[in-house]
Length: 120
Ligand code: HEC
Image 1 (cartoon, rainbow, N blue to C red):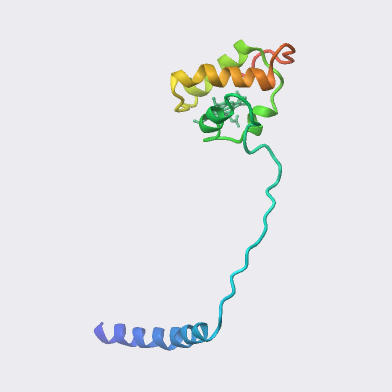
Image 2: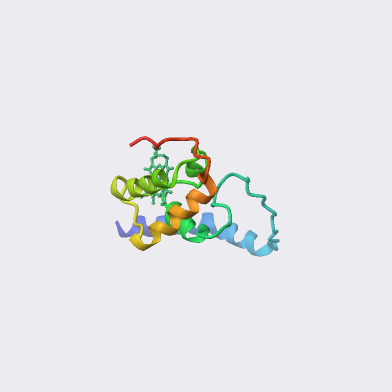
């Protein structure tokens, strides 16, 4: 058993030593790569309450899940946020809820709600 470990170690050394040596012979050049993120709805658009909404509503799904919904009344947004908490156990502090509901009503509701309520 002991000798097989020694043999294995020697074999491993025979494989890795040239690799390590050749790596040491070469200079590595690190390059910065410019990445343009796709402009999908990763975050909620700026506005009062955007930060708290970003902090509480992006753990499980993207902002697109919310932004692609029809406009809803304030009551419907309230019900939607409560559904996230009750049904999906979203860890949202109760005192953050009014700010989130106001924000959602501002960006996707207002005076022209186009949807009733989202599926319960
Ligand atoms: C704990 C995880 C979790 C968090 C946090 C969360 N959601 Fe969800 N949300 C879900 C799940 C799960 C679905 C259903 C996904 C599906 O049907 O594919 C969903 C779906 C939705 C939908 C689509 C309509 C519906 O009711 O299915 C909306 C709108 C939505 N969430 C809004 C929010 C908002 C606003 C917040 C922040 C207040 C939030 N979510 C936070 C888990 C979460």
